[in-house]
Structure formats: structure tokens, C-alpha cells
Image 1 (tube, rainbow, N blue to C red):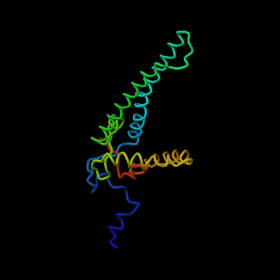
Image 2 (cartoon, rainbow, N blue to C red):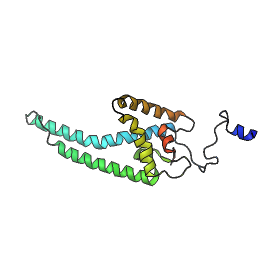
Image 3 (cartoon, rainbow, N blue to C red):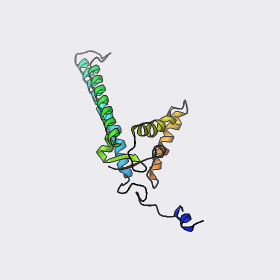
Image 4 (cartoon, rainbow, N blue to C red):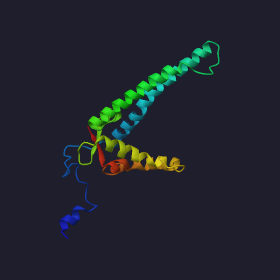
Length: 182
């Protein structure tokens, strides 16, 4: 066997620079903190956009009933909040879909300045991003009965994979994607 080839595959060699011979020259992996920040933003923003109108309209309706000296058995004013929340959900979904299709970014990733691409640096398609990164990754949670235990354990293990050299979680490996600075 050629000694150069044998040494090239040694696990003791330092990692190759990102882009070396892969067509990814100039691309820089997103930091773990940027990925965490994008994840948090992608959770918090829709919760606020959708939850705030519901909570606000509910509180207003309850306080109006109490001020009128009634016990709020039903809260009719929540319908307006639900309508606003529904509109916000549609807007959030549309905006996220546009960003993902255009550049492999969720709203959180766009705000943090990172995006998802294929491991060779090419654009990741919507099916790969939706089905392989998200739907397949969520399947362990849907296993009847044991999914309540397996789902959270899988999520933790998936997240811990980011501490590898390639900074790829399991869902990145399944979808053959990496997260880079935009």
C-alpha cells in the first residue's frame, strides 16, 4: 500500500482546512454559539408573535369581565387575539419558507448570519432541509409510548454531536448538510 495514502486517512492527522479539495473554499463553519442563538431565536420569536396576541386579548377580556363585576365563564374577546395570532403564524411561516427556499436560512439563522448548505457547499434544496433535517429527525418522538422518552434523549444526543470537529449534528449528517456563515 502506498504510505502517503495510508497516512492521509490516519485519524491522528490534524483536520483538513474547511474547503480543502471540497469546493468549499472560503466557507467558514458557523460557530456553535451562532447556531444556538439561531435556534433560540427561531423558538422565541414565533412564541412571542403568536402567544402575545392570545395572552393580551385573554387578559383584556378577563379584566373587562372582572371590572363589570362578572365572573369570566367564557372569554369572548379571545377571538380577536386568536385571529391576530393566526395571521402572525401565517406571516411567520411564509417568511421562514421564503428565507429557507432562497438561502437555506430560517429567520433566526438570517438574523445571526448563518445558513445551511450541502456538505459540498452547494445549495440545499427545500426537500432536504424540510424532510431530512426536520421530519426524519422528529420521527423518534412519534414512536408510540416510548417516544416520550426516546424523543428527548435523541434530541439531546443529536444536539451534542455539534461538539465534533465538523460541527454537524445527527440531523446534519442525515441530510448531508453543514451550517456556515452567510
